[in-house]
Amino acid sequence: MRFVYDDGGRGAAGFKGHAGDCVARAIAIASGRAYADIYSALSSRAGAERKSRGASARNGIHTKRKWFKDYMAALGFAWTPTMRIGRGCTTHLVKGELHTGRLVVSVSRHYTAVVDGVVHDTHDPQREETWHYPQPDGTTITKVNRRCVYGYYRWRA
Image: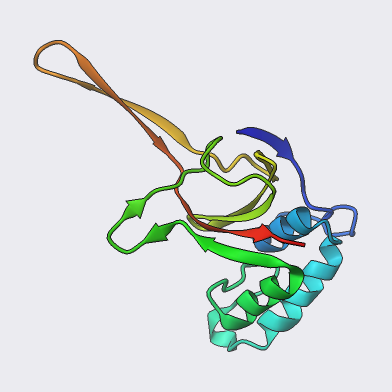
């Protein structure tokens, strides 16, 4: 997929430096809402969590929590899981395997925005590794590993 550098409005909102705010950025990009509004809403909700977990809009959100799922639904997003227990990875962060539209995509330890098949993020989260396995008969088996998508929020609004 094509990649476009996009901080979701973080810099324009006056935020500086590096942060683990991929959830806020991805939501801002996919929803078209102001980064500062998304960041503030996530901060207030994460602040109500037990402090022992250390969640924050800046350092990471617990996206499995009910409040997060309710917040995403209120914004107009619907969750689509792409992995199930015992089935392994069925969807990858590659062209043609995701729906078109405005998506907030969950990959390992990261959330990213995909808008009409284009990745919008501060770095390219696509991973593609090619492995070549020589065989005893002189042939080579080539396997390509791509980043697995755990699920995604699709914007319905």
